[in-house]
Image 1 (cartoon, helix red, strand yellow):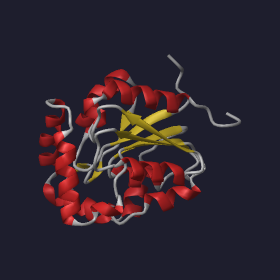
Image 2: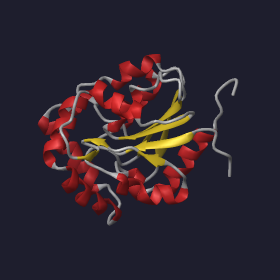
Image 3: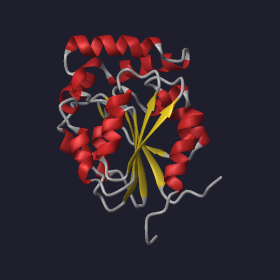
Length: 219
């Protein structure tokens, strides 16, 4: 098993909390940072303020930031922090095609049908704890963000990961996000949908470990 050169820091997705990565963290030592709309039920501030909250929680580097779903926008905003050695983006959303209610509902239903049950059911109590108000606020804050544009100036390795059954993060959108980063790459998890940290922890742990083992030039 390769020694980790960076400390993984996980940020849960929309409405999720530390329970979403419990099985993953049994396989991989990692910290979890909860933010409003992502495990915390308080009012959701702007994307820049969310990034500042995460920045204040990073501690010493080097750090590998791991975002899931809508937290990918927050971790991408910190790509330029000197402590950040790389990004892993699990199922990044904000595909412009999801901004319409109809498009979002159709893709959410198609993705839900592709999830691995019963592990995906663990999301329900997390969504209830975070609450629909905070989740709506986070969606309103994050969905307009062009993560593909933001990543054009990322100077660190960026690994975009999607499940092959994920309709919220379609293949063409994930490929666009990965291609936007100068050092980006796309990996796909066969049979996974959107809740890969919960349904495919072994595979996710392996790719996060690989990214965290990579040393920065000159380190």
